[in-house]
Image (cartoon, rainbow, N blue to C red):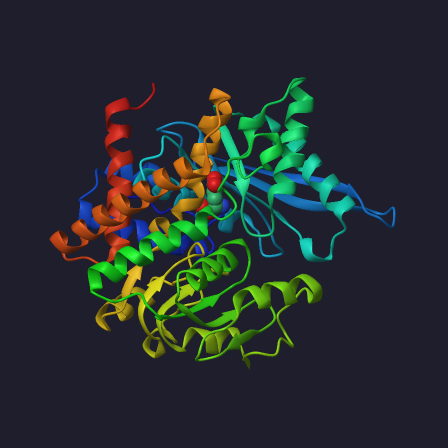
Length: 424
Ligand code: GLU
């Protein structure tokens, strides 16, 4: 390969670097074709847009928005839209790359994409959020389409945002195009089971890990960082399955009770008070403390880069199951591995969301809708078989579960890329 000094591109931020480091570790193990390697470490295309919104006070505020396609070898690119103040090009590019490996690992005919707007949705009115979503859709419209790129919820977005997105796209086309977005309300073609799909997927792989590690699930203790869509549904489902959810947290603070927290009561409390702070029924803890709690399963389901070189040595759990995307820094991986902590990596653990998104897209294209039983059975099958494949490779190649998951995903698209060849 020709070696020349390169100027780093603008998306080369610490989080993007983290995605590249993970990729390169796996690519080395795979002895990946260097030409394919070159193509995987860069996004395929990235769009930055300005999204002007007339706010409720009548002033016009301009938000920064992005949509990035990392890959589209196997089909349309797929990925969520994130509304968060931290959104920037590097973050969206990293998340798009992770979507590529995730879709390939679980065998979906999708490439990876991600989008986002740098904003704080918690301080915006419904009216402002609607206008921002519609204008963002219009701004990125050349880059999306049911066969091109399909959007979904991510941090800070939900089914209402997807409904506005779908409606705006459909207005431009002149007819309803439900398959442009997944994670929509059921009334406009959403799939049953999509809302809790990521949480359900997490529970499936945790149960598989229990089986492999010969842990009896009864009363096992779980600590969950984050109480958004992923954190809440995971907590609820594990609580219903008889686990002891000993700690949970939201952006502001956390709760701890060694005998187990009352998850439905916390949910009711949050509906009234927005945050869990002040809930009686647990001791106050911080988000950082939560990570170091003594428990069987630790589930980081909030934001990226939470488990680091600094705190990895202090974790006191048997299993880390990554609900969030990128919650563990690459320097922490070998520390967890050495300490015998069993890691279920993000691209495997949280892939239930995009898997049911795929079911939703298929149902939309066929105009034929499935029953809950079918969604959950198929999801269970996908998750369990992905877990088994990753575990098998991890044991046969003596690598941790993250490496094995990435190797499987990367290898699949690499084969497809080689088969298609390079145009022109
Ligand atoms: N945002 C979710 C993820 O990171 C779901 C993506 C999708 O359903 O397309 O996996």
